[in-house]
Image (cartoon, rainbow, N blue to C red):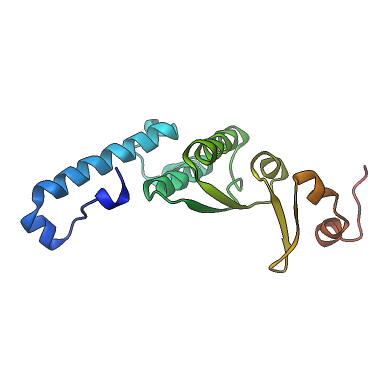
Length: 157
């Protein structure tokens, strides 16, 4: 189902095209269930979102994005507050959506392990400006990045 196939529940559609509205609702529910299955959230499908764990909420947010058929997705700190098990699942889903379905992701993230797995290229910004763009290793080794994020203190090698 494409976004343009959704009839939408408007007053005129309800009066003059009720069967089309019903068909659209059925298709939307089917897509929602398929999305929950893909994200492995069917076991919590009938719970309120507020009762989900942090990781389940992040997966649900990804599902909401999938329902809109977005092509470009901005994720702001998707690893924050997520346990490692659900974080791996989130990474798998993001990778699949990127490689198999053509989604483009922009991640704002501080989890270096996640950045290394998912981000190609890596772009480091400071004060709203691009400092460097390159591979994970190039960005991590750049003196300007070390200075901007670690200051004068250096971690032992």
